[in-house]
Length: 264
Image 1 (cartoon, one colour):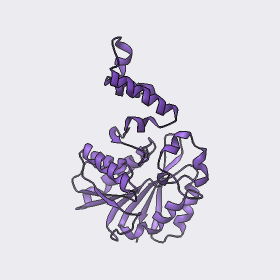
Image 2: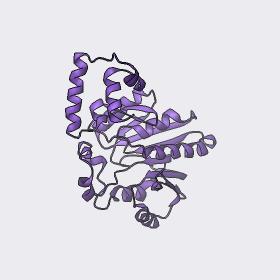
Image 3: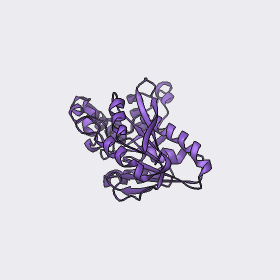
Image 4: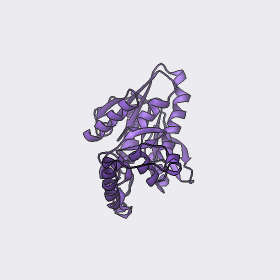
């Protein structure tokens, strides 16, 4: 659905086809007030997802507000390939532990928990933002999954060697480029976007330390930004035990997901 269809079906509580086939759809006063407020906010470039207070990701509904980054379709590739990794590991392990670093709205961890087909999975999800974790917990409740949420700055305070899979969609936009995006982006939390001068700050930190928190033969899987692959490969060159084993392109043929294995 386009934005207008999303807005009107939400306000009227109807299906998309009813917008076009029914001639008797009428606004109640409170619906009209919401519509006028929504149009004003949208004209000010506020994302529709924040106006409606929700968005869809992996076929699931997630609550969103200005405390969390709006999930993007590109990140569904990250979830899909994490589920593939889980399928290859879970049957041979008594318990499979997964860590979602920088969970934000919780969309990655919750989608994994919702769609995984094994019962021996334990998922921890961390974020530095208490406000983001509040939204993530609400989303876990709404989608009826169990996630262990922790407020941490990346790995700080976590136990060594605990996880079979670490998954992350870190901030990767270069600081100087944030202002070049559409005005909608300024409504989203800068902490979820800003990856430092070259967009690589969090890749350095995660790749440097991930092997300490992965079990032997565990995996790190991350979303990356456009044109960042070669720079990220250079980071891996200085890491003894963690080696990149796969690069996955999205539907537009852009390098989108990397997978690394811990050989230590």
